[in-house]
Image (cartoon, rainbow, N blue to C red; front, side, top):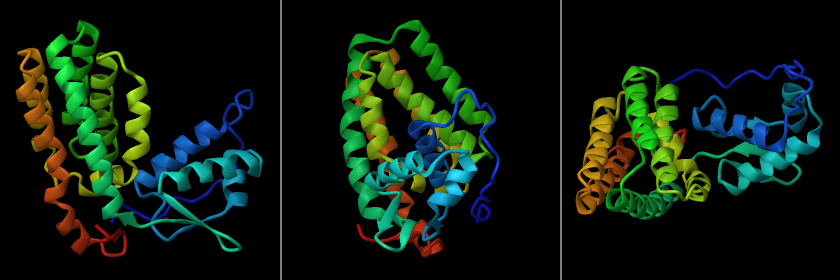
Length: 236
């Protein structure tokens, strides 16, 4: 597995002029959860997290509440906060929502076209994915950049916040599958198919390509469940 849970530090923020906010604490903990540095069943201490981020417990508590709303952690009264196992049921629901939104996104992009800066950003994201083929965390960052660029390219940036909120369990499964269960080349080729369809202004082909891409995760869930029964809850 990819290492043990991360150790908390007691250091103060690197820049005391910009103390951590609920948003920044939430973003860092979310990344730690997606990349499994914080592992399922692990207990999270508000005191230890406050020391780690050099802040009071209040913003930490608010960040944990947001993570609980996303399904990353479970807050148990009188016991504390615990990292949840990856829920296949939640992953499938997230995939359904994500597919519905992204089909609309790529169809709009193919119908109306993408401005040159967004089109260039898609190429850059795919290049970054290829460079990060052996770096699961780097690949997921580039993958998010690709999909976020599509959303921003059609001028409805608020959709990304919806997608990010919905895809929590999806992200953990995706990270766990890289790079051995899901070959990176397959994912990059699927991205190229999406972009090629958009370039050709072929909305039907763009929809077919994004459907194939969103279905990729379904091919590997059973294999991952068998390999990591301590991490995944098969409640689909």
